[in-house]
Amino acid sequence: MRHLLPDIEKSLGSGNLLKARDTEKDCFSRECRPEEMKRAVLEDVLRANFKRAQEASRSIEEYSKLTETPEVSETAKKIRFLLYSIEKNVVIGERDG
Image (cartoon, rainbow, N blue to C red; front, side, top):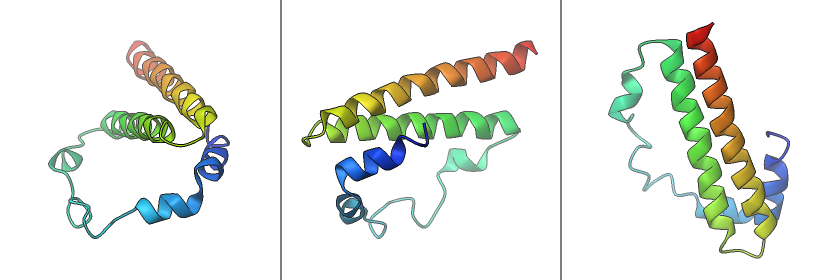
């Protein structure tokens, strides 16, 4: 999956992505979200990061629908569903194993 991300960035334009970033107005740029401070075990961190990656791929999927890069939307969707499957296998495997 990580090898697909540079292709996505190239298709969308890294300059466009940088222009869209606004860290000054980001509500959590200076503080942590409350749930981020309640990680009790490693699995909590793992699951939170799966969710972040899934949300990121969904955002890329939706944004790219506004551009002339339909292949990026499809790639991001594939990544998102692959992440869902990996998360399920990892979490269930940890509990069963």
